[in-house]
Image (cartoon, rainbow over all chains, first blue to last red; front, side, top):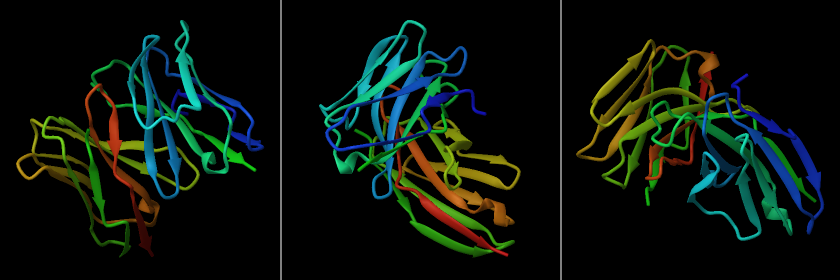
Length: 114
Length: 111
């Protein structure tokens, strides 16, 4: 157990629907990162939050949004889902914003859009 | 932004052989280069990392070397074992403390 908790583990939904993925960082970690992993694209950075504030955006679609709450858990919202959104979504956390100790991944949410 | 290229995409070795995976990066300001191992269906796990003020780092059978001038770094695994079979990802920090990953190397160690 890495200490980073992601729910749900699996999600199957239809095209056009909206889903919410949840991530609880390791105790004491203030940074949360979201990555999308698909077979042909590897690990793609989506967005980074530090202590409730957005710090950086990567290749995140406008249909996707995220936030980090006061208790530091984060949610990734995916809307108007398309078949191509099927992927593994990983959350990672780190203690600070400077990568002093690298970061730790959760076990991921496997999203299947049918 | 940072771009990380990783080679080879697949690598097959016999048990006991050495394996080397190479990565190049584009951003000369990058300072942190971790390597992650991902077994099938599992999360990526940090196995070793190196910072720009160090040229080499070892941890038992695993070593990483960094050449900042040439902007490349490599993972070396000696005396490979079947349990080393996995996908290995290199990464470089790309500002704002985010990591850009290479596309991964599938390592297969045959008994």
